[in-house]
Length: 311
Image 1 (cartoon, helix red, strand yellow):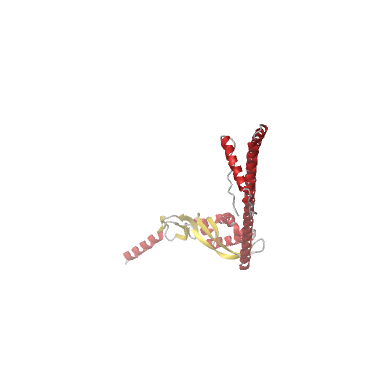
Image 2 (cartoon, rainbow, N blue to C red; image 1 turned 45 degrees about the vertical axis):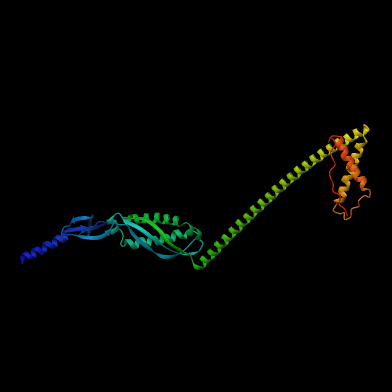
């Protein structure tokens, strides 16, 4: 029996003296209720019946949810805000003995600082500057949690919810702003189209004017050449007359006679053509002109053939 009792007491002493700390955790050791040291991961030995484990703390990064709360902004708008906090204990002794409830303390610290930061901003700033809010909260909360042996790694605003009526007003404002932008873009498009059309009309008018100028220049040049030819022909006839050549006069008058009769026959306003009674004289005139052309060896231009329509 004594052996069994001694064996049992030995087991109890061994369990009370030998402590194994898991990875990622640290234990505090107390002697008669007073903190003495911190047990790190691995095996540790305590004095039986004198030392005991005080607090078992996780040294891993921990995520805490900050409860949702209503916050009044600087422009008297009410928004609902909640957040998440990422913390890690860096000093087990301070985390165990400097604060009673570390999780509750950090949650309340975040809630109060959220009210402070968000309350100092307008609603538009709160909705658009979430990163700035996170940075300010991280700075303030980390400085406050440092005496507790805790490092605040990140503070993230999880949700920002304005009231329903304010959300509807913001939606109407956004719709009006988008419609205004659409009208501006449409007006700018119409303006650009009008400018392009005016520029096109201008270029078309310039090209048309240049075309008319070129055509007028060509017409003037043709008339000038025609006048030069007519002057040369008249000069030739005048020289022939001065030399006593009657055939030149007959050729010139016959040519004009035939041209006038052809214009009379081809006129759009002429319905009835009066043919001269002396057709044989006309035929003789034409034959005389041909003979004159043959005698000149083709030097004098031949009159154009004009068909005489009959009624």
